[in-house]
Image 1 (cartoon, rainbow, N blue to C red):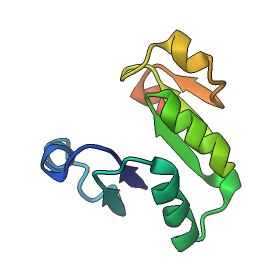
Image 2: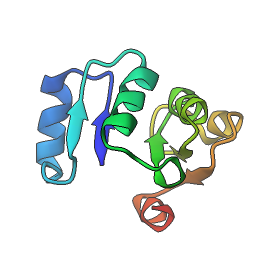
Image 3: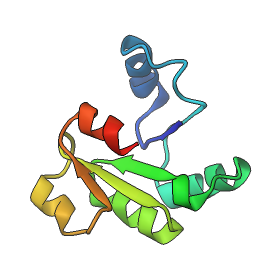
Length: 105
């Protein structure tokens, strides 16, 4: 698992540490403007199977990126965009809690 975010390292890295997720992620990429490029590199470098690759996000940007790369999208409703807005981009899954996310993954 990896994190690709537009956030700055001094914002996201302490959060990952605070939530005890330091050993969960293989890679953390910060200050990313166009996620498609970073995700494509991550997928290619790790030889990921597109049928078993998911992008989890809270905005239309992540859903659109997943579609562009041919991987599955999971929209989470507890973040940036409303559920109604997320549904307009036709994600593969919409989840309302971490438990639901765990079931999808």
